[in-house]
Structures are given as C-alpha cells and as structure tokens.
Image (tube, rainbow, N blue to C red):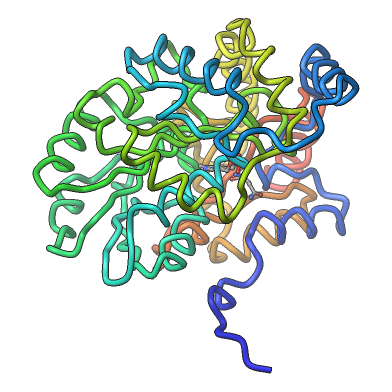
Length: 381
Ligand code: PMP
Ligand code: GLN
C-alpha cells in the first residue's frame, strides 16, 4: 500500500506530545493550552437541557439560526461591523476548522500565504493541504509584526495572510496601527486575510482587542475565525465560527458542507442561550489578568526572563540564564525532571531561530500554578 504521505512529515502535534509526556511523568501540564477548572454550571446545564429537550438531530448546515444571530449580534456590537447572521456567519467545529476551511476556500495550488512566525501550528499544514505554500515571516525580537519583512516577502503569488491577535504563543496583541497597515497592504496587494481571534476576550492592562471586523475595508476581505472553547472554558466542545462577507462565506460553506457539514447540536443550542448574557466574556480579561499577574510575580523570583504578556493565557519566558539546551530539549527536561510541562517555541517556526524561549499556559487553578511555581523555583533557584 502506498500513501500520498500528505502531512505525514509533520509527525504528532506538540500539544499531544507534551500532554502525553506530562501525564507519563506526573508533571503539571502548563504545555497544551486548556483550563484545569470547570466551566460555568449554567452553561453545562444548558447543554444537558438541550439534549433532553430533543435537540439531537442535524442542525442546519450553516449552524443553528439562533446561534448565528447571537454571534452576529455580539460581533457587530463589539466591533461596529455588519455581519448578517444568514449570509455571513457559519458555525464550525472549533477555531481549527474555521482556519482550515477558510484557507481551503481562498487559496490553491501555486499560491503563497504569509504566516507570521512564531505561528500556531495548524496554519502551515492547512495551507499545504490547500496546495499552497506557507511563507514564514519572523516577528521582531519582541514578537511584534515586522511589516518591513512582510512587505519584502510579498510576491505576485501572495494570495493571503494569516494574522493572529491576541497572539499564541507570544501573548502580544496587534495594535490599531498594525491593523491599519494590514488593511492598506491587503488592499494594495489584493490579499485575503484569515484572522485568528480565538483569544479576543483575553487582553490585559486596559488594552483593546483590534478585530478585523472593526476595519470595514479589511473585514471585506477577511475570514474572522473565533472559538467558544477559550472564552467559556470548554476547549473540548470544539465549537467555533467564521464571520466573513457573503461572497467569502459562500466559498467557505462550499467546503464546509462536504467536510464537516454541521456541528454538535446540543452545544449550539446551549451557546445560543448562554450568549444572551455578556457578563461571562466581559469578565474574562480581568479573570485571566489576575492569573497572569500571580504567575508573573512568582516567576520573577526565578532566573527565567519574562517576556511581555498583553493577552491570551500564555506566558513566554527566556531561559538562557538557566540552560543552553535547545528549546525542545529544555521543554522535555522541564517536564521529565522538574515536573512542569511547557511548549518549546521552535515548533511554531518552519526554520527555528537560535533562541531559548518556552511557553507556559496559566489557565490553571491558583493551586496548580502555585505547585508549578514551587517546582520551578526549587529546580531553577
Ligand atoms: N488558534 C489558536 C491561536 C489557538 O491557540 C487554538 C487552540 N488553542 C486554535 C486556533 C484552535 O481553537 P479550537 O480549539 O477551537 O479548534
Ligand atoms: N491551542 C492550544 C495551544 O496552543 C492547543 C490546541 C490543541 O491541542 N490542538 O496550546
């Protein structure tokens, strides 16, 4: 038997690898990004009630109308956009599928897609699956978007750009100026924009999230990819969405209908009802900012150098004062010897840089963070 070997070269995703290693060694898992605390009981009850009420058959292909309406209303209220629930919103199996399907919809063989590195690990394989090539453009040393390098990487074949703000793994957020630059560049070069905004409700120190939805000319050429997993502490539900103008949405749905078709009915009903109350997402930044502050204060007492964290639930550190091991080896050592799992930043590059950075996830109970910090302080001094 011969396989075409598509994507087999990628091996197993780092999140699966590090979670398995953490479990094997009894390490505290600050690697893969997910909360170790429960979701709001009200949301969980809504899920059960939806199943018991009989909402267990195929919902519409594009998503439950009430959920699409709630997503459109929330997005439009937050960002001043004009997404139409029927023509512009599609419910997906999480952010990963939004991103994958958006890329299948807008790029093809021979196209180039700019990704900003470090970049979330699903972008490159999704682009390749579409027959296109991912062009990795490194961010600056402080993990800001290096627009000069982006401009220098554009070719007549560039067809799309993937942006992620707030940014995993760095925790940086795009500024208003970044978005204006992106808008101008996308218009000038007629690019599609795939915008990964799954951490939109985790921004700190009074900063604002700048969505593509808030920039009309940008929104006109963008797929806005969102996920409820992060916002409502239910990463295992795998429910997300894409918001995009009608023409883009039509191309998106052309793929969606033959790959996923529709997603888990009870969760769509539960989320549609739960979204009526803005309090859960309005309070999320304050909730995670407190965790970030506790975590950073404690880490500051170790030789690990903290990089800025403006958003997301990730903290990147420079460990060069502690070890000269390459990032993947250091993350492994931390997991097996110190008992705290982390993610090496090298996995987010096509050509890893010579840096000493790993990422910790602080979406954990305070006691989990305290135990992890105790272990780090003991091992690293
Ligand atoms: N984009 C980024 C930047 C992420 O960190 C993640 C997952 N944590 C996703 C997309 C995927 O989201 P989902 O789990 O909803 O598929
Ligand atoms: N997005 C999560 C992270 O960055 C992991 C998601 C996954 O395991 N695929 O850690």
